[in-house]
Length: 258
Image (cartoon, rainbow, N blue to C red):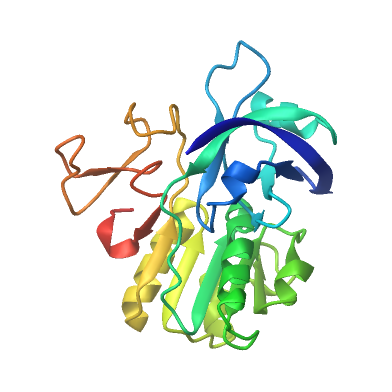
C-alpha cells in the first residue's frame, strides 16, 4: 500500500453523473490488479476521510490507473472538477482483488460496479482467453458507459431497468434470457444484485466471487466501519465479521451473508 500524490493525466465526463479519471502513480499501478481500490483524498481540510474508488484499468507501462466513479456527494463532486495537470493524494492499492481461476468466466457488473469488471476482463484476455471465452453481463439504469471497451475483449450482454437497452430487468434476467454459461461468476454491484447472484450461482453449482460495496472510513482495517457478516471468525475482531477494506472487497459468496 503506497501513499502518494498522483497527477491527473486525463479527466472526462462519460454520461449522466459518471466520470473517468486517469492518474499517473507508477508505484501503485506497478502492483495493482482487478478488484482492488484506492482511497482518494479531498483537498478540503473539512473532509478528513478519503473516498474509496475501485480501479477500472491499470496501465503498468504508462504507470497509470483509471478510476471511473459516480458523483454522489461533495467529495466526488470535487474530484469531477479537477483537470489534467492537477494532483490528488491517493493511497493504494487496497484489498485482495480477484483471482483468475477460470477458463470460462462470467463477469457481472451493475451500476458503478461495472468499471472494475473492465480490468478483470482485460486480465483474463491477457491470460490468453478469447472473446468467446469471456462472458460479460452489464446492468445499466438506462444510459450505457464503457460498453465499447468491453466489446473489444469479451462477449457482452446487457440489461437495463427500463429495457431501453438489452434485456429488461437485472443481470440475472439477461443471463437466463441469453443462456449464458461458464465455470465461475465474478461480480460487483449493489447488495441486492449480489444477493441474487449468490443464489443463482448456488442454483447453477458454480462458484461466485463478489466484490462488496460499503461505506468506509479509514480504509486500512482499523476502524471496523465496513464489516460484513461472515461464516468464519475474524482474527482481528474475534466475531463473525470480515472487514471489507482489507479482508475483501472480494469474497467467495459462500463466505459472507448478504
